[in-house]
Image (cartoon, rainbow, N blue to C red):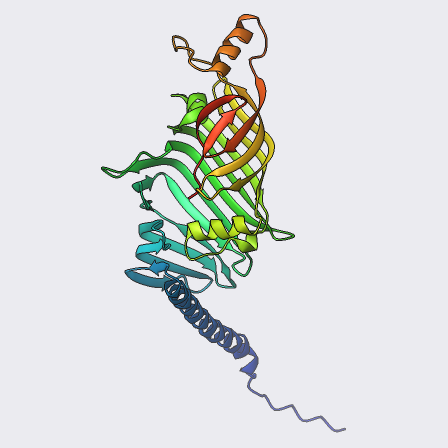
Length: 336
């Protein structure tokens, strides 16, 4: 009877134990290289954009630029950033913090923690500060790109010697720009809990009350909105037959109301709006306030009779003036 010889003992193979760590190291090195490449791409795009804008008379500049956010984000911090167009409109910020996902550096969210300063060519600077002020940019290969601006508890302070700004403060602000089909673009603006100092009819509606403002519109021929300055761009767009169609426009302050239901607007050679809007108006004087306008008088009579003081009329912008029915309510709004 024979016995089988005992099998020789062998040391366990360790290659299988090290394999996951080797794979992880390769992934880490590969992702690190990819992140550094993306950082270089972001730098190159910013520099190329700044040079392109400068060649056309614009300015995009900053004092210092710092990238961070490894491994999953691409963060950039700009100190004393400025963007300006040839006619004098500009925006500058002592600090801007931008963030994008490393896998999608075409979508940026930018925060201005110390506010911004807006420069108006004739009327001077306005400082904008608040609890929060941020913007997002996406679809930069489209025109217009997707832009959103949001603010909370904003305060608008003109610089010493500068002209007043229509908004004094607002509890919440939203501005959205979107591309659309058939060479269209869309603009939506909303200001909640706003203190304002408008002129003309809007000023009488808002008065000293807290107001809410909504503006929702579509722009045709948006591809023609190009030029060496804002004024040139709007002028070229007007010459191409561009128009602005109002979806909804609303200003309400307490019981007072101005609402645009429909209408199409263009911009005249003087830079002011022209066209007509179908509107409803309810101008209610505060107790003790003198009745100085026809619409306020009509509202007061309707209230005395127990009727709805809301009036339907046509708001016309023509020859640089704003007219509600037969009554001149002030200058037409200026676009440039």
